[in-house]
Image 1 (cartoon, rainbow, N blue to C red):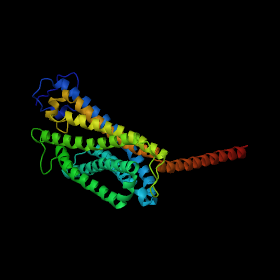
Image 2: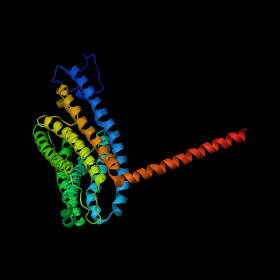
Image 3: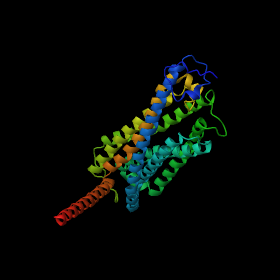
Image 4: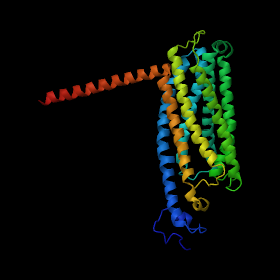
Length: 362
């Protein structure tokens, strides 16, 4: 078989994958494009996101280690506010861990079932995370703007039921999307081909993603605007009291959440809208993608931005909670104080030991 790259001045390690791709006369340029795309994918879709997801996993784990014990100490009135917050923290932790594993799975040849399970957990984490944003935001609105209704009509049991509904809806969406996502990257009980299946799936995924992100954005914007124009203090209802500092903290956190969420939405919907009519196989090392390698730079970059945005968002969310939630901030400040005391004592002990050693040597 003739090597179609033998007359090229540039040679790539990916050439063996494309020796049968003879329906082009521009193979020398295309093989360079393949190398660039693979480099983008390696750094911007594997290494950097993996690092971000590790940081997100640590932050969310630490945040939950503070939140869950505090949640157990709360009375029922306060718990109503934090049920969706706990759900959001668990979803973020699950999402960051699964995204780390998915980065590694892309380097391996894996079956449809394995891909489906990981996509299922991944999508379940993200959809339940989106629902938790909506739930916690609406509860914050009711607690500050409609405190009497919130205190009398909204019980802990009702909030738990809403949280359960959120999980069930997330499961339905996750199962649907995970099947098609797994079919695109691995052969299962059906194969999602480029010609017929992928365009339909792209449209369906775009509609699901756009709807899933639009609802939280509208909710967050509405509540944030309402809180900004709310002039009177929230009256004390039972054991639930909101003072100016808590009120300001809620607005600040909502603003950060809205900013992060809008950023994620744009990085999700723009690539999805761009890919609706684009027919691209999951792996670059096939002829279909080789022939259009010079047109795959933007999809590769967009896909990378999409992943990076999620990594940043999963870091920002627990970070905002640690910084702007007074209850959580109080705990980690105590942790930092204890740690500084331990480090100080260890340093003093080390210095004292060295001083005694010098005296003995003299």
